[in-house]
Length: 463
Image 1 (tube, rainbow, N blue to C red):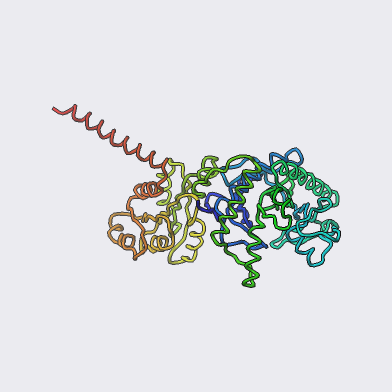
Image 2: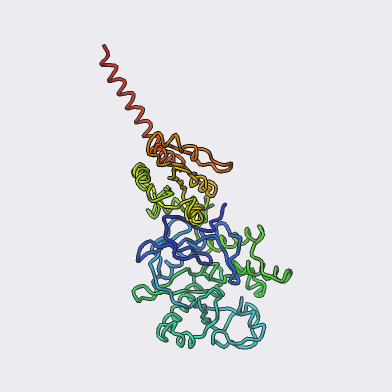
């Protein structure tokens, strides 16, 4: 199983990369959210992904959205494949609403140090780690790179929400927590605490982001809690936090990487929680990037592949348009760019960031003739095929300048096609997309058949 750490596509307009989710603009009212396999803890974005984690979060949040839609509407329109969702564009509120039913996590750590007030809520003496609180409490935080506790009075004083709106979201959060508690209890699970995020759609409060997932909630097995409340193993991200705190005790610093056994056990716990909550099987995932690409193509959000035509000069546009015209019937994403290897070659890094490691296959066509350094510079920096299509004006131009396109340095595999139609067709073949291969194979068969028919017609006229 492979991990989906980052989503890149020249066909998607990136809005935001969060700790776990990548968000893209679809239109003014819709965005695409991809739940990656990244994981964060203690406000650190860890370098080690958890393969399959994104699917668990995406599908589990969708299940909970359906179970709680009668309490508050949510932003989900529909899921797209395993790890993505189309959602309504919402204006997010600038707070996170934390509901706590047990003395656990950061609250328990603060309590051990003598704290008895959290976000302005007083808690009694005499509690122990993982004890159930007398009643659920709401402890909001800010939404920042490092979330900070904030009181309801501060929320109002800082203009984050009006008193009426905060009272509304607090009430909704408690109702959601009660629903989650009831449904999880039926599965033999306890909802210790959780985070909710709200936004506005046409001034209506909606639930956004995620709900009751192992990333946003602390969830325990009820039977194991009854046996040893202080040592109940978490079915959530607290398992990773515990590992990181143990590592910090040994080394003095929180680690940014996770060993393979922690990765495997984290996924096992997430998957167990998903199947217990939804009572649905979690089938083995295919290669994550392929699965996401196929889902986005099926949804019509991206084309199956792209061709980037990179010109060395705006004067090459007419030649680039010839290439684009040949590509037009094949339902690909094509784009034309202007970057000179000699005059602003530093922008090649920008091209690599946009067209390099993408979820869909791509090809670069370099359009530069005399002293063609562009094709070589692109081929040396890209891990996708690069094809030279020099804009030669005539045969003498070919003879004089073709060597600069043909003679590439080592480890610089740029191919060269003199005819623009051949360059375009070479790009189509280099994409190696199954549906495109079938189309091209059909065209080849049709061409062969036309030659056979022409031969038969002419042979019949022979005397």
